[in-house]
Every structure is written in C-alpha cells, then in structure tokens.
Image (cartoon, one colour):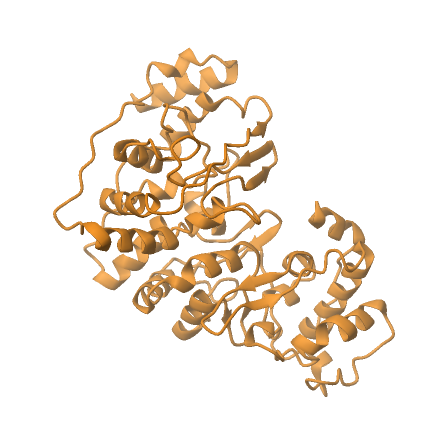
Length: 430
C-alpha cells in the first residue's frame, strides 16, 4: 500500500496536481501525553533548555544580528531560498497559539499548524526519532523565551519545489515513522550517544552525502558531504579519511571546544554547532557521542585530505619567523601582516589554541574550500574564558589576495601546492 501511495503522490507532484496526494495524506493531529518519567515545572523547562541547545535550534532559527529563535535566517539552495520561521511564543507571528500536539506533529512529521508540509531544511527526518517527552520539553522551554513579533519571510523557490504537497511522496520514502529505540546489544552510554548523533544533534544532516532526491544516503552514513560550500568531513571510524585514528580525548575535546591538538579547529557550520550547541552538553553526553561515533562502520570518503603533520616547509620555522620558507609573494606578505601574530609562523597558535594550524584538514586541502570560507567569514566559538575569535577578512582583501594568502597557507603549513583561484574566492563570496 505504501508503494502505491508513493507512486500516486509522485505522479501528482510531477503533474502539479495537489489532489493526487491530498486525500491520502495523514495531516490529522494525534493527542500527545508525556510519560510518568517527565519532570514538571521548572525542572521541565530546564530539561527543555538543555535539549533545545543539544538540538541546535537557535542556529537555524536566528538570523544574523536577529533575535534568538525569531527566524528569518536564509538557506540558499540550488532551487531557491528558504527562510526559517519564528519559534518564539509570539501569538501572531510565532508559535504562541500552537497546541502541544501541533508542535509534536511539526517536529515528528514536518507538518505545520495549518496542515502545510514543512521543508526538510527543518531536519525532521532526524527529529522524527525524538521521544515525545523530549519534544514536549523543548516546547515547554520555548514557551518561556521572550516573544518576538517577526513575520515569516516568503520563500523564493522555483517550480515545482514551491509546491509543498510534492513533499508528501518524499516524506513517505525518507521520514522515519517511529521514535528511536535503544539497542539491546549495547550499553546505556552507547545508546545515549546513538540517540544524540542520530536524532537530537542530527549529525547526519551535514556529514552524510545526499542522493538525487536530496535525502541522506543511508548506505553512506557520516561519510562526509559538502554543505553550503563547506566540507563537512567524514566522521566514520575510517582511519585515513575519517576519525578512526583520533583518540577518545581528541574527539571529545573537539566536540566540546571546537579544537583538538594537531587536528585543527572547527569553522563554518561545525563551528556554529559547537558554539551554540555541543559545547553546552555535559561531559557525559560528549563522551557518549564520541563513543558512538567510534563504532560507525568505516567508509572511505570522497572528500579525502592527506594530512602532512610535519611538512618540510616548516623546518626552521618558529612562532616569530618563517624560517627558510620565505618569499616576496603577495600571499607571504598578507600572512606576515595579518595572520602571523595569531597563528604563528610555525602554526602552533599564538593567542589561543584554536589558532593552531598544524594537522588541520583546512590547510592540507589543495582546493582550500574551508580555508577560504574561514578567511571570508571568520570564526567565533565561545568558551568559559571568552570567545575564540577569528575576524572576517572579506572586506579587507580582494579575491586575488585571498586566493594568494590561501595558497601560501596551504603550501607553508600543509606542504602542498594550493590551487585556489580568484574565481574560487568569488564563488565562495556568492
């Protein structure tokens, strides 16, 4: 029967006939109720706040310079732009008038208050695995945040992607129909890590390649993908292209702070996830997440970066001197004037460990994909001692200059020939 529904819905989507799928779509609202284990009062709100951070809700539902959870963040896709919605308790423009059942339905099934299909930029394919208790706890916390009146910005998607009903066939194929269940073959720590990675922290949404229908490839889980121009690297147990050679301490330190010695520092979406989400998790949850990731079957990544931990170009370099590897190129000059005081000529990092470049995938990648984006956008990851901050240099240098300094960095710290062009930088700006 499910295959018949999928075929009918898919045909309706192709022909742009909403009625082909409408009568089969389960848009009804099911009553929800918390279990006896669910806390109440302030304890419930505290639980919900923790889960909201673990789920990284603020990252997507907060626009640059905007109010937390008020929406308006743009997600640029190959077929248009989607804007996140307001999930503050504002009664007119937020979710203040939503019932608990409507909220749970949205999180589990990707269906809005009025029965509209939500786009999977909202990662309900992962959130469908969340327990109802956890979703209700998130709802309880969001009800306590400051209401913000900010109306939804209209999406700008091309046909047929602007037809929401076409998502119904997609959901029947790719959205889980039941919550996550623990494995009897593993202990509580492993199961907690699995729940975090698969559902709450939704790691696969960035680190798993997409198929032609923009769903994650089940056979390539966590094998790495390109998201918004950033490389989200392989986090399977593969020892060469994944994190199989990382120690438990290195994985845990990276997840909780955004940096691990000789492994590099996070940037882009991963840096944001650590800043707004992962660094706020308990040490027990970080350990559980690392434990689970180490058991993911190894997969070779198409985003392979061969890391040279001791390139000959650093022979004789110190924090304040590049050693013999010096020239009069524009890349060298820019690094000397704008970068060396933080990163050091030996790549060990001057002001903060996060400025260490040794062992970083970004500086060992000849394409410079993540390096260029970090230079353009900067990086900010908070810590108990203050923000670890790299400023944006997008306005300070031209495309050709950023390409030049990127290639110098790749050569000096990675021992490789960088092939970044001004056109690459321009594309990254766009």
